[in-house]
Figure 1 (cartoon, rainbow, N blue to C red):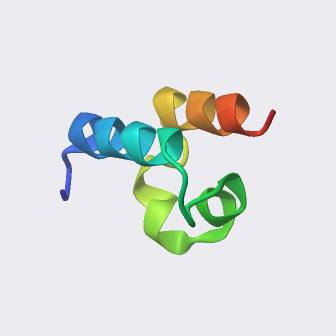
Figure 2: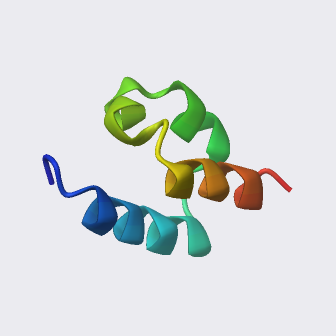
Length: 51
């Protein structure tokens, strides 16, 4: 999904909404998320799921 930020963030939002191993800690630390880390939608997901 190189360069397809909206599609990647749509998929990430879906993954965060279901039970699984993906969590806020991984999103904050995993370098795989560096390309979208500063994107407002990514930041909103971090805030939403940090609660």
